[in-house]
Amino acid sequence: MVLSLVKGRVVSTAKVDQLIGRKLLLVEIITVREHGLERTGRHMVCVDAVGAGEGQMVLTVMGSSARTTPELREVPTDAVIVGIIDSLHASGRDLKVDI
Image 1 (cartoon, rainbow, N blue to C red):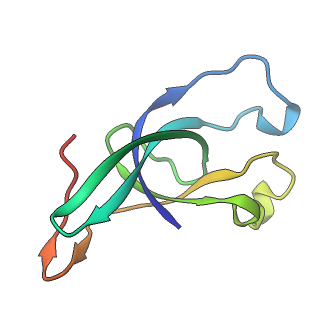
Image 2 (image 1 turned 135 degrees about the vertical axis):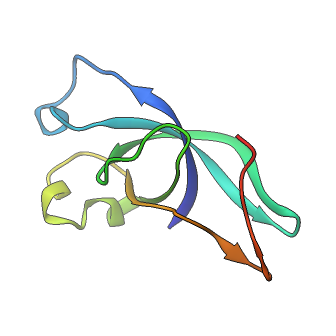
Image 3 (image 1 turned 180 degrees about the vertical axis):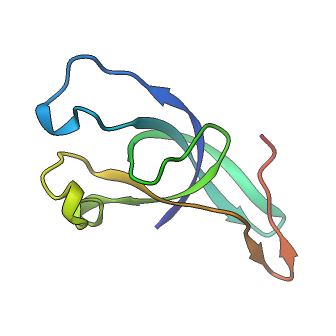
């Protein structure tokens, strides 16, 4: 799983049938450093499986793991948001991303 920050929503009117009705979100991948969380500048589009919103930290899965849930098995995606992070604690402290 990968830590990501939801940056915005992606709207696509022309898409394959399996993506109709699916919310697509733009996320930035976050990395953990000794001083805390850091933005990477790397972005990707994910199918939202949990109802995430802009500004939230989320867990994303990529590759074949993105299609293991029954509702996404037939969806042509390689990136899915599978969790919303409430808090992150490591090395004896709470970690946050400056938005």
